[in-house]
Image (cartoon, rainbow, N blue to C red; front, side):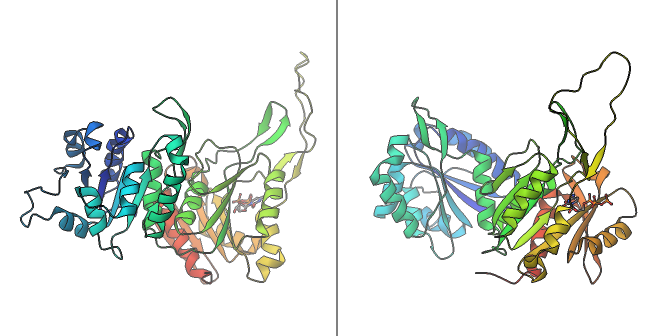
Length: 406
Ligand code: CTP
């Protein structure tokens, strides 16, 4: 379940081509367990019909402050009081200007003005042409609505409906979903700087071959995302995986264990929490060939000699910052049998206060997992769930172990 389950969202559409994305956004919100009440301006009706939005949201769409369906004839009061949040997506340049002025001559701006500001947050997903976005009037208005308490989501960059290219596109529906679920997540890690390693490493044999493993990176990416949603500043050092970078997370791509160690060593200086989920190769070819190794036709096979990679987690856990308690280290253990026994021994060997065990072959590449949290006191199992749900639980657990920072 996400943070959006059970939330009631008033989704406001103002006029813009990006209205087509509001249809998909509604589907995603419903899928996440939210209820959606759509409110459209007259201009939005030029881009998408209330019929589509009603069919997708399962509720009659509101478009007028004179809507007589409400027994008290006050849709602006009723709709804004029952919402957990009002999200305007797309939010046009004109609509932002209207909010700045506190206009109340049509339903959507009226209900934004009438909302109990301390209880019902207002989120805006701007959408407009790049010149309109860059115009000082728009930027001035955005600063003002933010100062008045609205949360202004970012915009995307790219091709625009007008044929131009630049900033101002509305975020894609999955990106808005991420922003919204981050918005509702308690900020347990506010002020923390979290460093995560994820994915496999790739140890070159020659320029076209190498040794790697089956780690998909999914657990580490889910943890990076959950930590960011919980208010942390997150850096993700990732081996080669084809996963999108979670929104708001800084990603440092690496290939080999040596590159990962280098990136981690420099980032760990400023971090307060280090979570090592990467499946780091234990060994690398001692002498990778500068050129592709060729068959010579004789049937002879190359002999590979290996050297051991440095243990990134153990190295960080031994550092002065970790030992003084300024850096809280969390390890992972991918085992194939005797999970509790191996993982408990690994916690002591690595010198970390918390180690998270899982059965590697059962989880590599999957979307769900089971975790065992092992600390000095004992262990606790997080039963089978999606990696994202487990990541949220793990982040909450870690937050309870580190001193709050503000
Ligand atoms: N790890 C690391 N650097 C390494 C090897 C492992 O940082 N060179 C980290 C992993 O990211 C994980 C933990 O150490 O957090 C345990 O990794 P795992 O592969 O389960 O254990 P190993 O140390 O490789 O031990 P073994 O091979 O005996 O299982």
